[in-house]
Image (cartoon, rainbow, N blue to C red; front, top):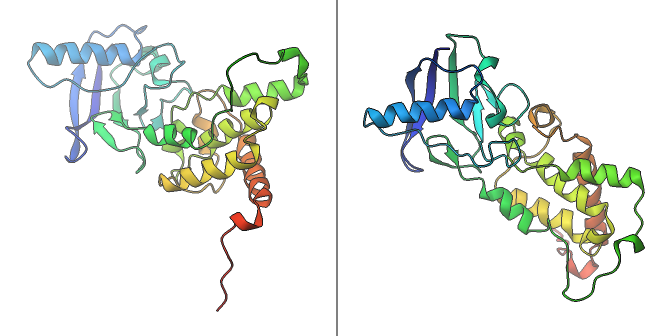
Length: 257
């Protein structure tokens, strides 16, 4: 198979960028999209040209680091991670546009690589549980209903790839944040921080420059783990709950004019 690639090239954060056109030929239809990029880079290396920078790790659809926008779709047009897109999914001879995630909170590092550490800082703000050393209680001493287990695990499968942010017209990270809050707040182990988790994570999300949710639903449509919009509803409820649970002394004083 033969393809024409229009690839975003940007040397670093400060430099401007533009699309470059490259031809790739003789591509095996069973090759993954990232394997095709490997072949392009091998060709560029032989020609002593700068290779295309892109992220990859597991190449098994688990880690989500392969954050590419392919033909306008974050992570590609199949609602899977970019490494699970195969060249047989495209028409032979097609022109394919490849670019990095577009969001002010995901600055471009080089070419197709973006800095998604803003999501890590949202996690650090509250996406964890308190643990202590020493003997721990028997897990069977905290029974959890199957329905709650299912809800928690359906949210916990979020891999934090950031496709939801890239797809949202507002650049919102509510689906990601909601998934992290929901799976922790439903389980007994997550109760000690429950009153503050959603408030702290939403405040950090806002501080990172992510936009607000207006229920477009594009985030759920592109999520490779098929996280439901329900997590955003729970995030909103938990945020209000956390605000109401704050002590009066902790609230900002009201001002009068």
